[in-house]
Image (tube, rainbow, N blue to C red; front, side, top):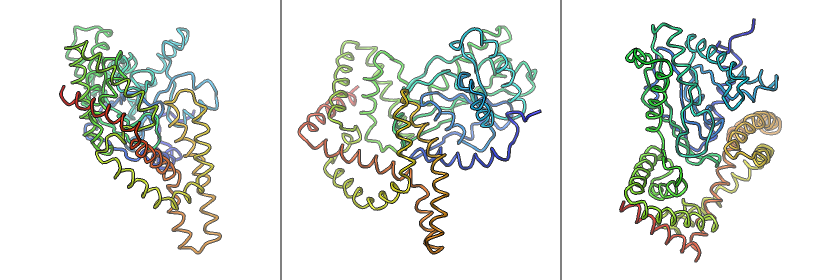
Length: 433
């Protein structure tokens, strides 16, 4: 009889160290907040928002060394070899209604396995929205997380607490590699206490109540635009309002985004006609800014010429290091970009970049390190090996530095000046709301 998915594995544990390093290396900065809120006892179900494809569960995986089992949509398990690999990685399938009614009976099997995982003391992670959407908001919370919580409570007879832990994942950019990630643990929901406090409710109503609670707690941890009809305009305005807060001060920027969204949506409800004009201006600005290839990052700068000169100097000074790292890792980032470019769903591209880097750079780095020690004295070889260790990440950072620097210079052109006037006008309007 094979090992259970939640049981310890030496090979998996060793792989985790290296994998976690690459997950964290996918970002310029990762910050986890509220980890002490995670209950130390009872059945723990992680429930993160789902906005960046497989990077979301990977972010939860790297959150701690605690054993975790995940679920993924059932269709990716159709290939037996892929299914075997995913099972080794402690990922099990879950069927959704969209997978067909004939497969829904298998969902009950998933629920039973999930309860078994939780009973073993292993933590469990499910994406409660059911599918990913690269937007700052929440899709309707599905039944799965509530069914697992209720089933675990019933299986244990209420003898141990069952917790649903909301985790808000806030990305600096969904589509750019080596951005920022803020993962914030919200207030855990004691499903056992909730169920025991409502003996008059049937299972359906209990699950509805848990889903509503999770929606509330999860929305408190992220930037959440509720007005979907005007999402693009509201998010552009929110970024204008918060943009002068440095990107690495993620918590402060999140709070500023939440405050701006609340003000803008309140304005939209109170003065719909004036808000419609503001939204139209925001979309026109967004179109012109993108056509001019000017980043908001450039427009946030109060001294754009100084920023352009400084970034240019950084590009020149770091060019030798970049050249060495880019050449050493050329097969890695070139392959990663080719694979990412073929993926239609842009939300999966960073996952492809991370996975490609993990596999190819591991192999290539071992080969290059051996060659260094074959042809260089020991100390020089060791120094070169350490210098090249983050080579793919350094390469991506330089590409981003070059992109932003070019944007800074474009913002100084006549067209850039016109875009900046639009920016200043919109910022003034937002600040007065």
